[in-house]
Image (cartoon, one colour):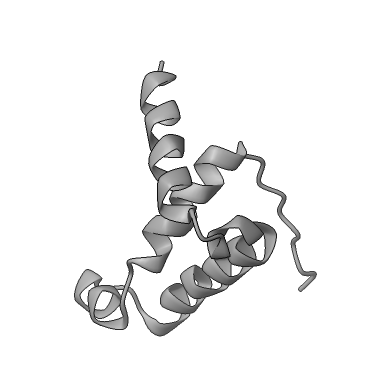
Length: 78
């Protein structure tokens, strides 16, 4: 079977909020959700990739930036 490479495009604000949501998924929450080990690992891998691509997550003012990001997303919701 040939590996499928999938490219997902999203705006940075969406990526930051998705990363923050994934960070909140503790092992206990994942187990309670009914996800199996492979599904949980896929989410961890996605979290790691987002963290790699979003270096601002380590910024001192990240919480302030994240709040502004969420506000922008809410204001621009269709």
